[in-house]
Each structure stands twice: as structure tokens, then as C-alpha cells.
Image 1 (cartoon, rainbow, N blue to C red):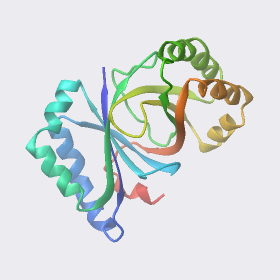
Image 2: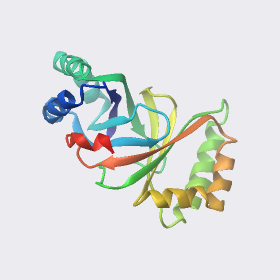
Image 3: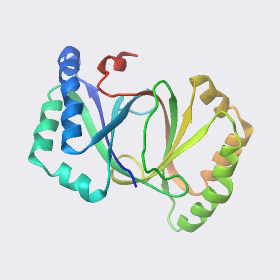
Image 4: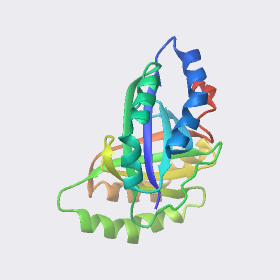
Length: 213
């Protein structure tokens, strides 16, 4: 089961060139530590930070070992010389959507939902997601349900729902879809602090200049 570790940040103004030089070596060094980079996001619409690096670990134990290593701490300190608003979180797959090999495809777009469960709603929420929400979304042929994540550490929410699209036009079609509108209104009866983001995917995070989109 893939465990994701994500890093989000903004580049310090005036440090763009230094960041580009650094990041070409940054990802191979993460890989050598055991954190496999699977790609990155640029947040087009929604809350920041704007740049997100996504890494995968084979287990929580492996990830904790890496995060506690001196080499990792030194590497993050080097990164922070070029970035600000650094945030990180650990994600565990949950529910019907589970990943053995989580990957990101070049050029696709993501619409992610973030929220917390209302107290006492855990079982009702799980039944709703499995029996109503996911079946309704899966009938919409231009959206793919690609992730359901529990946020174990960090972040702004307890749960993330991840959807993939070929173009941003399809995200707009989803927003205007009455089935999506109705089922999302139902979702909100189980959750609180609901927010969302639209993101563009880059296949490999070391392709650093894509952040200028």
C-alpha cells in the first residue's frame, strides 16, 4: 500500500534561478533516501502554497525512518533557502480507492476536495461514499476517481478526495453537472470545512520551469 508524502511551498521571489539549479539534484537525492518522486502539482485555483511535490513510500515505518534521518533534515534545510510557506503531510489511502503503485500522468488535471468529518458521522459517511457518492461520480464519463486519502499528519483537512481530468474544460463541465451538484450537496451533510483546488500535473517534479505556468 502506497503512503504519500507531499511537500508544498512557494518559491522566494528572486530565487527562481537558484531553485531551478537546486531542484534538478533535489529529486535524485530524495530518491536515494527512499522517497520515490511520483510527480508534482501546480495549484491553478484554490488555496496555496502553489507548488506541490508528491513522493511515495512503501510503508509508514519506512517513511518515518527517512523523515528522521539527518540527511533528510539537511536536504530540507537546503530547499528552504529557496522556498517559503513550506508545508508537508502524510497521506494514507482509504475506502474503495487504494493504490499499490500511485503515479501521476503528464498533462492531466486534478480537482481535489478537502474536508473534515462531522462528529458521529463516520459510519454514515462511509456508507454514503461507497453506496451513493462514488457510484454517482463514476457514471460521469469524463472524470476518473483516482484517490481517497486520510491525512495522517499535516495539511488542512482530515480527508482528501482526488479526481483526474484530461482537460480543465472537463472540470468546468463537472461543476455544471446537476448530478455532481446534488451528490456534493449530500456530501456536505456529513462534513465540515469543505474546500477544493484545481491543479495541473507535471510528470516529473525535477522539470522545474513548469511552475511558471
